[in-house]
Amino acid sequence: MSRFAPMPDPPYYAVIFSNQISDTPEGYAQMADTMAELAETIPGYIGRETARDADGFAVTVSYWETEAAIKQWREHAKHQLAQKLGKDRWYDHYSLRVAKIERQYQGP
Image 1: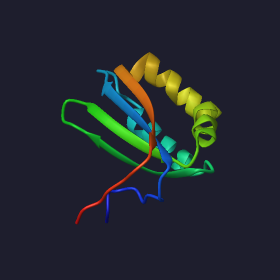
Image 2: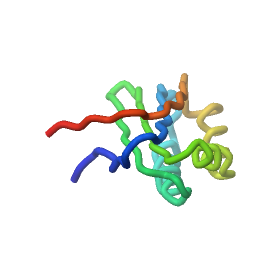
Image 3: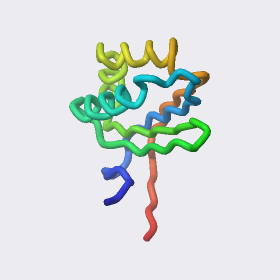
C-alpha cells in the first residue's frame, strides 16, 4: 500500500501542519483519526501524508484543490474543537503553513 497521497496535476494547495506533542496526549490519537476521516468528507480534499518520530514531533501535509476547500475545513465545527483541544492540551508547539503547489515530480 502506498503512503503517498494521489496527486492531481498542479496547481493545488498543501497545508503543512508540524507539531510537538505534549506530555498529556490522552485522546489525541483518537481525535487525529476522527479528523482524518472528517477531512475526507470535505469537497476539494485530495489526501494527506503524515509522519511522527519517537520524540513526538510530527508533520502532516494535507492536500486541497482550492483555498475555499481549506477554509471550509478550517471552519468546520468539529475541526475547530480539535484545534482548541490541540492548543489547550495536546501540543507543546505547532506551526501551520499553506502553500500553492505549482510543479511536482515523482520517482520510482
